[in-house]
Amino acid sequence: MFLIMTVTEKSEQLDFHQVTECENCGRVGAVEVFMIYRCFCLFFLPVWKFDRRYYAKMNCCGAAREIPRETGEAIRRGEEVFLDPAMFRNLPVSHYKECPVCGYRTEEDFDYCPKCGNPLTRG
Image 1 (spheres, one colour):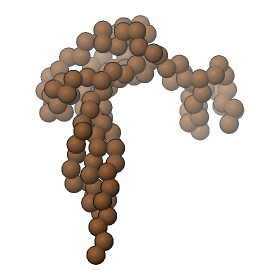
Image 2: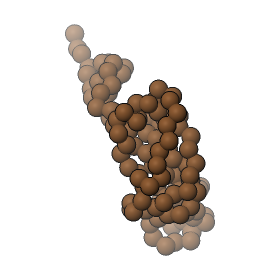
Image 3: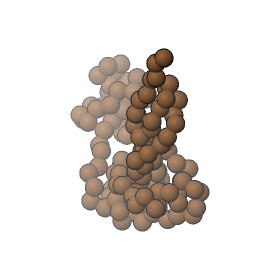
Image 4: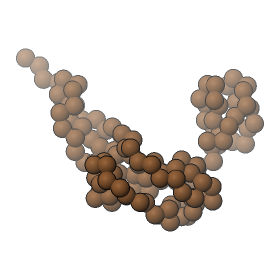
């Protein structure tokens, strides 16, 4: 008899809605909250989730910060939580461009995708 056991890392976006002015880039954006966890799988079926970590990310500039476990658990349970936009201040901003057709991402200052030639959009 064979037992197939694995440990994998997975992420899950939580149902959280907060729109605010980003103190990192100055644009208005939504805060997205993610739970990243490890999962013990038996025969490729998830059995046990452990090592949960929670991250908040601004969708306007990509600035992300780990949030306290208690706050993440409250968001996961559906409780009303407000995240302070000041927590994103002075974080590195991702300035990439992405092709809406083929999905190619680049941080170079291209106007058109080097793979397919379509106009790039700022990510």
